[in-house]
Image (cartoon, rainbow, N blue to C red; front, top):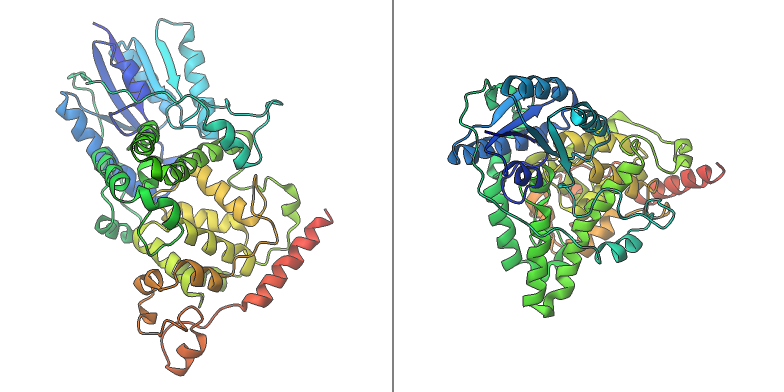
Length: 462
């Protein structure tokens, strides 16, 4: 009787899981998840991981097996299990993170000369790793060029297969013993907004396609319209197959050609995720060092009080504050508002983008190393295909354009709910006159913008 070990990582689902599909060809399938506390990525993300593991364990039990939970060094744990259970094959999907590539390669090399069959798969993204590069074998530096090539690529069609798991009793930790929910009590309230796991992901995405995809292109930048899919947390831990999402949107476009533009706009966002991972693969220091090294000479001016005001949503700029409060309350922030809030930190407050990266890392349920790093470097102007250095988002202008009726602001900044619409986006005078509890602006936009531009002029010399 043959045994296969399937190592779950950022692919916490049973449907369209390439490593799991390969393991299904064996008589017994033994599933394992290994938690590495030293490389835990985020507190809010750990909350999502906890609940995703709970659902995955239940799903596996329905097929007669049990999910093994371990904590520690994956190489040591996998080796011990392979020897103890006389495993014939080990399957896993690449994590696509720089620190994991050495572990993956080590496992392949270790067992290549033995009777154990080891294979890893490109499952996390749409396109095969390092496939979409220029003729010079360098990464694309402009997303529009990347997208022209990407949308022509063949993407593996989603596959599903009923899996039969081993019923052997192998020692395992309880998921609760990983203590993923400890550290921040504020994570408890996420339960009011999210339901992690595979089944919820599938249903949520289907609801989005049927109800909101047709208006996605027109409304996705308006945070008060509730027109986005909010699938990023499910993708971060692999609760849903990105390939299944791609083909579902393709089918929608074929069924409703009048909405083809909206469908392509959404597909671009899925490809943007791949684009981020290509940058991380070529620039492993993307999370903490600027791709454009001239930015090492930018005259940052870190101020603890200003940073704290930004984190708490107390900047005096309603759209920024609404976004930061939404983040702390729900573990999520609308993408348009993320750009505005991030730009405010690095260009209005001149606080290094790495501080923002770390705060998002701690508070986002959809934290993704590649997307988060590329997003911050894009806003700063220091990364690949970045926003121009002279582009400084005007938070008031952005609010007037994308939250004209202030639905989003009034939801997350209750102090301003009774403020007249004609002054709500610049409420300083009204707030002072009526002695409201909302703070005055912590910086002047025009002054801050000029200081940011002066700083960028300075790094040109380098």
